[in-house]
Length: 238
Image (cartoon, rainbow, N blue to C red; front, top):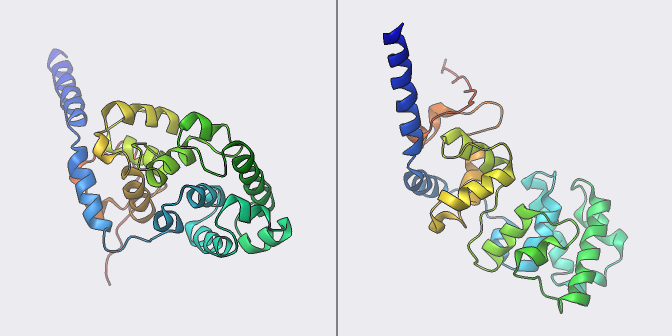
């Protein structure tokens, strides 16, 4: 009985120490290199414009990337500033961004935000988290993305992919994206704050999927604790 307790304790200590030693630098360097040549360039990454980033994020809610990016591109060909956006008829915006999810509601949100930017911020997207969160329809994920990519301000954009993969790695132990953001702020080296979202989103879409992770082809498997991971079965060649 005593030896069993010692054995269990030893395993527990080993797991805890391994989790503490998750080499996030190696993870990030590996993923950056792995996806560097085939990264899908989105309208958000390409523009680096705070307003376009903000509107792109609104369009992306509950909508797949392959639908969001073309819709954003079509919209920005018509209007790329708050003042130009307000010149468009709502029905035209709706037709332009369709078939993004909730396109009518998103049209109203886009126009409302554009109006507020003109009236309260001289047509500029604020570069402050608290001010961004005052805009209806803007959450922490969107605000952080605008700060990081639009203003080059260190910020951690946490979505479901970042939350899931950070926990699977054993790097954090959190229950929701907000807790993950706060945990990453405490321990993630600042040099990775602006890039973790890009790396983990791509990794989450391609390999570390929500339902069944493709661990057999994961470039960072050796750094991963595989916490609550259901692994996909590798298909054998006939």
